[in-house]
Image (cartoon, rainbow over the protein chains, first blue to last red):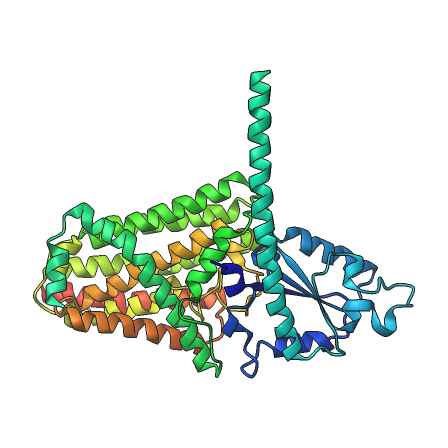
Length: 161
Length: 293
């Protein structure tokens, strides 16, 4: 069964965003949109999370934090860039201190455009991220099997040698 | 219902233990699902499916488990084993005191797990868990003592078979037990060490550094613990099994309402208030009982 699709846990990080997209992320948790009906929880802890929702154009300071959060998340994990700043940097892209998008730092899987991104779109993006999460899990499982097989075969060759 | 009770009582000791080990996580998980649904409805939301806790746990088993210190997963495993053992003792009708101390031992291993990692959030969570243990432990022991005073036995099997209603002899003990039940079920206002909700100032408290299957085990242990605690509520009304089950379930519902109505207390208030309640309603109940006898 596809359990990742049924219970994706989210961590949200504001990487130099103007707070507009962050308000919309939290708006999607309110009674009107209710993300939790899909089993989505805002965990606030990278070690429990499956999906990283990053907002903002990412500057030199937040780059390190963003990277740190991503590294702490257990596999499989998905990155969602929320808002046009996180996607391409928007009006800030020429600033000297700005990286210009989350994908300059992390491998982004889903881009959610908009300034600020609409809650409907965020929910849609997170559900798309669930599909990718599922794919990544299957890929990982296949890789692990392959690795085990290779290790076993190399082991037997060594023993024979 | 009486037929069900008879079937259960006809089981051997090991069969009773096995029944608890197999059924408790199912009941506990369903209760957790109902909890989330009811909480969502109270907040005007639609809420996740009732089976959501099972989805969460099954997903966590598929996740990668990041281990900071090898002791941490060992501690969680012991937390699970001792909680299950304590619940199995209870539902097999064994000694109530032994069950209480095994449960305390299980919590101690959980605290050790919280301390074994480097994160300061986890350390503060573990410290708060100890404060919670100090707050609720006297009342749990008083519960066992009160039941002994009325029935003349510490054995759960004898207490269940006691013909009179325990609640008439132990109203104070029951009230005190309800108070500390909120701490044990990790509900607001006493969810200091870890919380199931988003409002968490310590990242995730004692479970901050646990991921994947270790976190799933913690969740399952919590289900076992909940069923065990509702079992103790059952004991107060054991003269009528139907009534007892209804009271146990409505107690859980009551805790959900409390959970949704309160902000989190500070640890000082948690500690002082639970000891005050223990001293006022718990000890006085026992003193009055002793005077009557």
